Length: 637
Image (cartoon, rainbow, N blue to C red; front, side, top):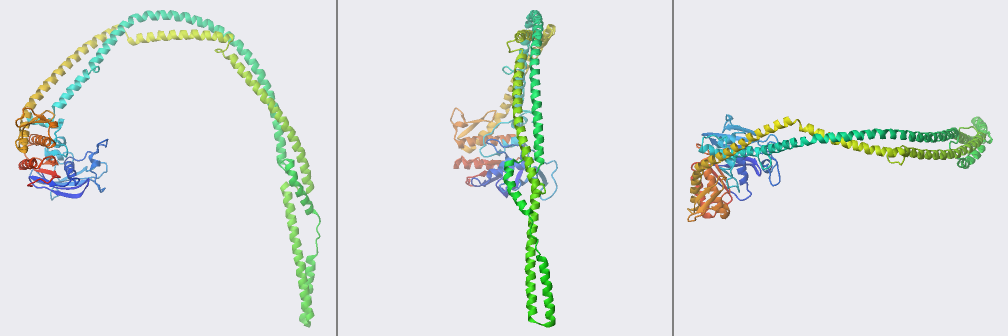
């Protein structure tokens, strides 16, 4: 497989394009220019984005980390060559929660889809390995040069050195065997400790059952005697309670009768007061006090009398009509005789008619206002004259005085009723004390306390008997328990045999894994050593690789190999890069090799070793495409 062209809307990349050629491709760019983003984009195009990942403390999933800064959907295209065919794969985002899940693969320059290639299997079909193996071999992300073991990589290696099947790994099988062992025994947990506890519990029950029956018989005899004592005390308590209850009820009846009489007297007084108030409310003055009415009523009565006095009617209208007739007569004579005196006479009579008409109009308006005011005052009190209003006021004063007398009587009766109610409450409290047959000092209370003590003893004995009986019932039949104990012992022996067999299987598996490692590790170490020697100029010739892919190296002339902690950062990077290249050589499939993606893996190397590393990558690039992203511009490239 070979990558030809990338087009990405991914993270900080906004529809940017990157082209590659055969062999070694070196992309030089400063920090924060998008190199790691391009590497992540290649992986995303091959294997997709896991939309199920969630953000947590210290970790941001790819769907959030590489969301386009512009806010556009995450998408991209990759032109590649696989099986001598040019293919274009694209991934788009249709749903916000499923970035780059819309996948298509067509032959480049056409719209013909590639059969059997989809978004789930694209990476594995094109590279020949799963995403987990790809990330631990051909994909070297920034800061992850060191190889970390995984079940997927282990399966791949097992397939290479054994049968070719990639369905099993030593780690998974060993973990499964250990899980089976833990299921049977793990410290104080598991099937075996559980059976041991159950067997001990069954044995204890059998021993306990032998002593419980005698205790039950003794408790039942004590319970019978206590119940006879309770029956005798119950008779004494009932007789004393009846006598005290009768006395208390008689006192309550007398108090209730007094309270009822006082209540009826008060209710009658309230009814009388309500009728008097209703009578006043229906009168012209309502529920106003005579004092508040008198000041207002005096002025209105005087005004009403004044309005009722006779007023001179006047003859203004007749005089106005007469003057107007005389004026018209004078005007008619003027038209005949044409004498100036007649004109003056007509004008005088017209003026006099206007004066008399004005006086008549003002007198009429005054009479109308007096009539309206009189009607207003009478309407206020719903009466027709001052005499009726005065009579109603006297009646109101009389009714008001009667109402005040009734109110005083009602207050007295209410006080008597409250006193009677307090007395009745006292009687009730006293009756309750008399009917309290537990805390009082009466004979019934004393008998009641003795009865409660006896009942408590009986209840306690009953609980003890019930507890022992329930325990015996829960323990079951001794024969059944003995049979169950025998079955548990047989099961215990069977599970113990299984535990021993699993332990033997784990040891056998460990020996087989060591044999497999002895077949694979030398070849892996040989390749890694050759790469290490090539980059360091023979300074470090040996690389020792452990089962978990941790590595040590030995300098030429040294007797002891050194762990990565004792090496410089550049040397450690070279060692793990050599292991990575060896894993790629052995773990990745033969035939058309997948590209090697490297992100700033040479940043800690000096110029000499960087040049040697670039030569090594150039040699590897003869067989597979190598894409190197670097912030340092290599020499001679």
